[in-house]
Length: 139
Image 1 (spheres, rainbow, N blue to C red):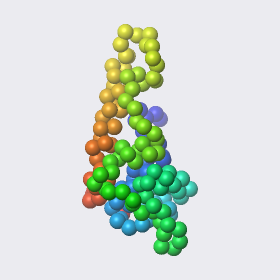
Image 2: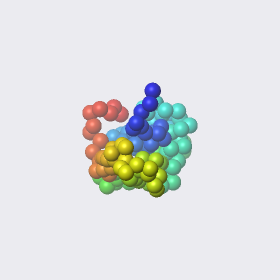
Image 3: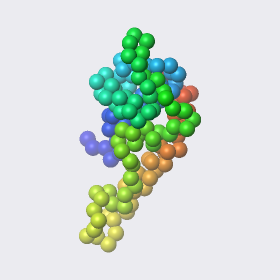
Image 4: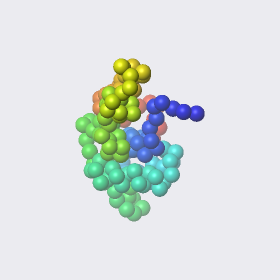
């Protein structure tokens, strides 16, 4: 089965994991994050090391260690987290990024451009703080 819109597992781990950390308001280790996101601890570790590198979280080893937020949840939007993992999200005119089209107008009528812009706007306009009391996510 095919999906038109989907997130990579890495982006999903980053977004969900950061929201979990914001909700928990305490450090969480790789095992906890892996269990709550339904991901492998190795993939969670890899994604969160990227978030450490970009300054979103800090990590501490040991029995009381784990990942801890290093940002202001009211000022950090989901787009910043997404782009840390996936790179800059671009809204392109052409869904396959061709400079020359053999048609007079896009056969998709710009729907992929509209969907990407809508997705980008959603991520940009929602901060981690917006999900701290989210009733759909259990910490």
